[in-house]
Every structure is written in structure tokens, then in C-alpha cells.
Image (cartoon, rainbow, N blue to C red; front, side, top):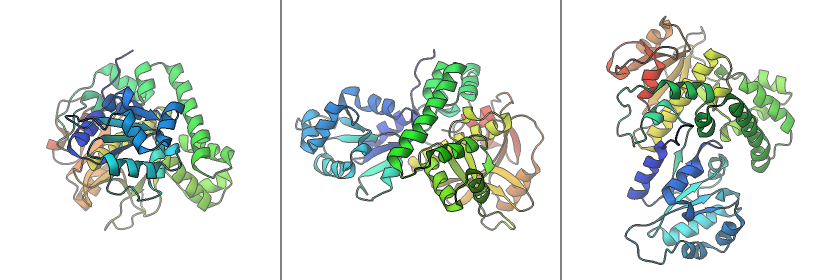
Length: 402
């Protein structure tokens, strides 16, 4: 089995903690590696896990007890890094963090991780405003497997990923455990177990949803429709709930990182569709159809890049798509500082350039337009140095993203 991979956000969080006093909140899907990243930053002996009864007692004793546990009363050359895992399960976790940070911020650097629920709970109050920055840990990607240094520019020079890693990423997904294990039977069991945990435990703990059977039916339907537009009224009929309930359930699945929505971008585009989002699974390995998997694979890489650029303060980025009422569509458009920057059409195979790429590039004046083909071999050429719509290997384009 390959050696564990050094994660991009180890470097990003190390830089943040060295330069800033604010806490680092690390959000992301269940089993994506957040606790491992925290342990590498803080050391396992400086992490308090709410699920550990002894650690829980220390947190409940208050900030002073935590400070004593970590020796914060001692003079140090540099503030130590401490981590809190699954702390959001504590009903007063925000008040605890506020008190601990306000008292000891000059003596310690704090990382807070947990399951995907951390991002949901974070939205409930602004009591910690100004005291933290949120970071987004994603599954492994082509760029992260090639380099784990903090990006200083939006794109990197192209670099070839070895064939075994590319195949493992495509077949088993980017979640660390199945990617490293590279065993089809293990991956299938891991996927089923993760889905059950998310749809049963996380939904039960987070929401008041009682109709778990119908929610699981919705999740099963959405698992088969990655890359498709969501028509809420039609889905509601299939699941036998109201359209408003269906929307709330989809939002819940997004909050738990089961999948994500890509919404249309429509500024000044005549006859555009302004409502229907497209749905994508977080784990592209669960998508059976090669074309849908290729689009989901590229979507996950682009979303990861957008979140990394935003987390690093390199601009304000959004991931959207383009489609008008006469069915001209481009799978993805990345918006940079409110202006279209890059168009991407994702294909599993084929080299015939989509006419929609040239049409939309002329219409919205985006600097870059690519048709990323998964089945093409790597080319050692900078995608971003060429002009005009281009068919490019997905291996090349994705290698240039964080």
C-alpha cells in the first residue's frame, strides 16, 4: 500500500498559524482526513477529542483546565498548536472557544476540526466573528498528489502524475483510505458504510428530519444523477414530499458534504436559465457512468481549487455553469472577482471541440476555455499559456490546479 500522502492543508494551516492569531476551523466531508491533519500540526498529545471521556472532562472543567493540560502558563519561544476534535457535540462549544481564545490567544494557536457538521453549526451564530478563519479540506486531487506546498499563484506548471496514482484516483476516489488501499471490495464496503453513517448518524444528530427512509431514497436517486440538473418539483414527486421539503433535504445533504450544487451564471446572457442548479456527488467513485464520472471528477477538482483560492485570499471565486433555453451549455465557468475567468467542458473521451465553448467565450470574454478529456494522455504544455478554446488532457489541466 502506498505511503500516506502529505496534505495541502497541512502547509496552508501551518502558514496561517505562524502568521495569524485567529483560530483555524477545518471543515470538510466525513473521513476526508481532518483529524489526521490536525494531529500532524499539533501532535496527538495536544488534541482534545470530545468523544474521549477523559478529554471531555477537561473541556467541561473550563478554559483554565485546558490551559493547565497544555502548560500554557509556561514561557515558550513560540505558541504551541492545540486541537479540538468533534467539539461541536458540546452544546456550549462556541462559548467555550470564545472564552478560551479571548484569554489565551497570545499563548496558543488553535485548530478546530470535526465531522462535516462543524460547518453547519458554524452558521448558527456570529459569536466567534473575527476570532477564526474557515478552511475547506477536500478529498485528494491530482494537484495535491503532485505537490503540497502553499500555492502562491492561481496555477502551477503542468506535471505528470504517475499512472498508478491516476488510475487509483479515478477508480477509488480521493478519500484517503480507499485511495491508499486500492482494493475494489474494500472501496465498496467503505462507501456503503460512510453513506450509512452520514444519512443515519449525522442527519439524526443535526436535523429534525424524521423521514429517514425517504431521505435515503432521495440520496439513492441523487447518487445516480451526478452532473444533472435538479428539477425540484419532479424530485419531490418521486420522493413523495413537498417541493419545499425537498429543497431543505437537498440543502441538508449539501451541508453534510454528501454532494454539492453548481448554480447557473447568468449575468447579461440572453435566454439563460436562472433557476435549476446541477448536482454533483462528493465522491466521484460512486458514479458508475463514465461520462457522469468524468464530469463529477472535474467538478470536484474545480470546487477544490475555488475553495483553496478563496481560503488563501487570492481573490473571490465561484464555480458556476452556463446554459441557455436553446440548450447551449458549458459544464463549468469559474468566476473570479465577479468576472468569468475560465470555461471548462468535461468529457470522458473524444476530441471534437464543443461549439458552445467558442460561443460562450466570445459572449462573456473569458480568458480561458478548455475541453478537458479524461481519456487523453498527459501533455507537458501549459494550458493557461495558449489562446482560444482548446481540447486538453484532464491530466494536464488538473495538474495545474491546487
